[in-house]
Every structure is written in structure tokens, then in C-alpha cells.
Length: 243
Image (cartoon, rainbow, N blue to C red; front, top):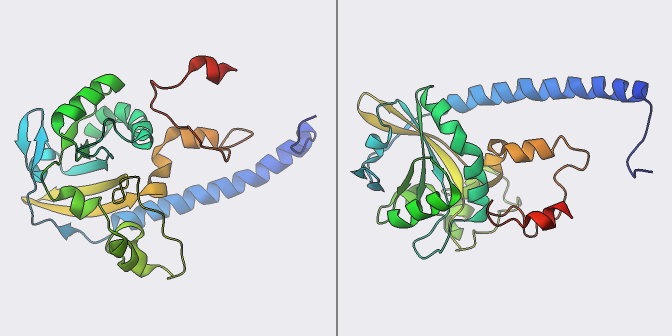
């Protein structure tokens, strides 16, 4: 007998209809939150930055590739790392196929990491991704948008925007290298200028992972044991997963 509540089809239907109302309310609230997100003030980016790409060095403005909107995925892969972060690789698996669709909605999507370009290209081939991936090695881009000190987290100039939150809220621990967390930043290009419009980190990127959303709809949900999961997709032992 399953440990979960067991009932009749009629009981399930009544409970499902009640839950549906809450799901619809969440959808409406999510739509409203998206509208408010779009109304955040734009901050002009004065620094050009420099990114190494497969087509040579490009500025932030040039990364837009002729479109008016840019999403940058801060993918954790430091200069001395042998491979990219498993969690970031997990996210990249989800967004790789979305790039072409974003491009046809006036949005350019790129991943950016601190590792040199040759490391990024080799790892991208290993993972089988086609998403654009640029190196911010040697520039201040990650320092300004994805690298945070403990002091920045405490004062709200970095991850978690602490100054606008209650002082007793837990601030998430630093990333494995002590300073970097994965995230997503949005930029706009208008009248020859680049503007920063939005950034989110850690659980703020949760809804971008389709696997999380699928797990949330299974009987057992996400579970609570994440030791060794998620992995890079070429590191799973298929026999182990089937046992």
C-alpha cells in the first residue's frame, strides 16, 4: 500500500479541481510579477567590457548581434577549473534548444564564463551544445554582474540584494570557489546605448530548469537528497539509474 493518501476517483477529482483554482491564481500572480519585472528601471552600462568569441573580441553591445535584447547566462567555469559547474551544465542542457526560439523574438542569448575561450569550446563540444558561449576572461564583467564578496552580499550590492531584505534572512553560502554563483542577466540596447534591466541568481533561475518543473508534477516531487545529482549529462551511470 502506498504511503501517500489513497482515495476514490471522485475524491481525487474534487481535490484536483480545488488545486486547479490555486494553480490558476499562481499563474495570474506570475503574469503580474513578469509585468512588474519589465517595469524595473533601466541602468545604463557605461563600460564596454570585452569578450572573446569565436568571431573575435566583442563588446557587450556587439553581443546583441543586431537584436534589441540580450540574455547572459552566468555559467560558472573559472580560469583554473577543469570543467564547468555541474549545476550550470544542467541548466545549459535546458536552454540550449531555446536559443533559436529566443532569436526569433528579438532576443540574443549567450553564456559567459571566466575560463579562456579554448576551454569553453572544448567543453561545449563535449556536452554537444550549440549555444553561443563567450569568455569574459580579463574583463570586469563577472566582477560587476556575477562575482560577489561576503561584504557585497551583506550590503545588498551583490547576490540576494540583502539591503532590501530583513537582516535576519539567511544569505546563501558562497559558490565552491568562494565568490561566484550562476545567474541570468538581461540587457537592452536602445539608441546606441546598453542598459542593464534585470538579474537573478540561484533559486531565481529555478523556473528556467524544465526538469525541476517536471519533477514538481511527479508523485514524489524533487525529493530531498541531491548528493551526486544533477550530474553532467555524460557522467550518469545508466545501469545505476535503472537499478
